[in-house]
Image 1 (cartoon, helix red, strand yellow):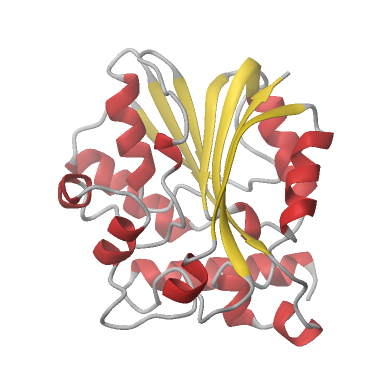
Image 2: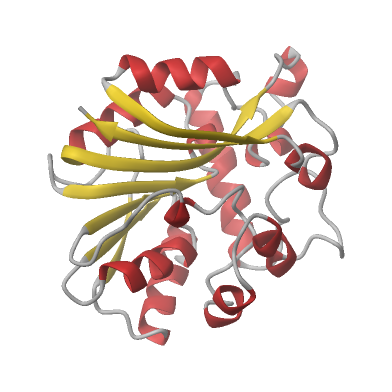
Length: 249
């Protein structure tokens, strides 16, 4: 499947989720895997889920806002911001002197996130329609970049990491939760639309993912794996949720 087909699949799938027609993140949906239960299983508190319930669509594989310090007054960029859940949590940390920018490739997600920003009365959180391979963000303008189970959906991951490096200030930090592979998939699995949209089909092997970040002059300062997520959300496919904290050298 070529890169434009992958982006088409992602837009279609996540657009459907905003209308209540799609599934949760992963490949094991059902009554036991609601957005609230998924969020709590990967580290979000009961209070956070309750406070921003309209923004939580159960699409993450970790909690990037807790992988490192986000300080008052900073500018935070969320890649694949969805309905805004992680953006609103980041906004609590940066305060009124800070700013949070969400970028998502799906128009329906951006519209829903903007509506949520009005509902939750966050004037320092903005959402933009954009491609992670070509971010609508200025060079050296962000203190922190976060992303939650999204880089795996991007066809050109090297370009995505180059864009992260470009928009970060010197010494800026990136906190990622993402799905990686523990062994290679078959060609049929790589081209399965459900697996692509479910964060598996386009994922990199774990070591390749880490090396790609290191090769772009990031210093990895935090790395953790959750392999149990395979059974909970991914029907025992060979995946793990990788949590990474890195600094722009």
